[in-house]
Length: 194
Ligand code: UDP
Image 1 (cartoon, protein in one colour):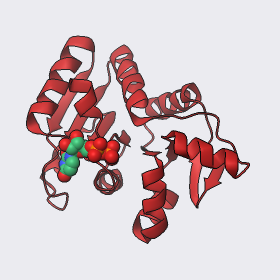
Image 2 (tube, protein in one colour):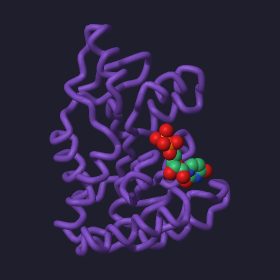
Image 3 (tube, protein in one colour):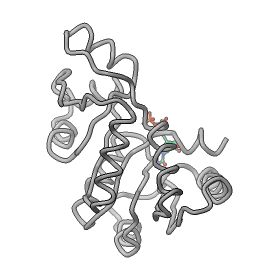
């Protein structure tokens, strides 16, 4: 169920509907790239054909991450069920990974932040297999980190590099991976670690 807002095809599901779909795809080992699009992203896509194409052709799901998107949907008479943020999905998927003992890879934020995030995962989600992590300050053209992720083939990759960098990084990765849930989560590690 898609709702078009300024040429961005949003998926019109509640958070729990999204999570049910993601869980199914993870169980079936289907690659899944998720973009949580806020108004800033919608405006950026409008003026950046490369990013617009990514949203149309590469993202498997696009959620409405921001009250501005919900309001735009109402004004355009194509209402979206609810706001679904990257941070909330991140927490829900960590819970799922913990329950199902899945493997997770984290990329993004400053070194001390990512280390705190890793520590929190070990404490609060002890059954997650954290197979790797890296701070977010690297050249995405350099394939070292991609190669490490491909080798470890995690069930989930969370990239907190800010947009659009995280989506470009995850798209490159998606083409190389056979499975994995991939989602950009902006500044989420900063919140999660604090
Ligand atoms: N970041 C990063 N690498 C970069 C640029 C930014 O890892 O090259 C991180 C930064 O440390 C912060 C996050 O990406 O944790 C960006 O957060 P912001 O809230 O600006 O992103 P948005 O949610 O607006 O996309």
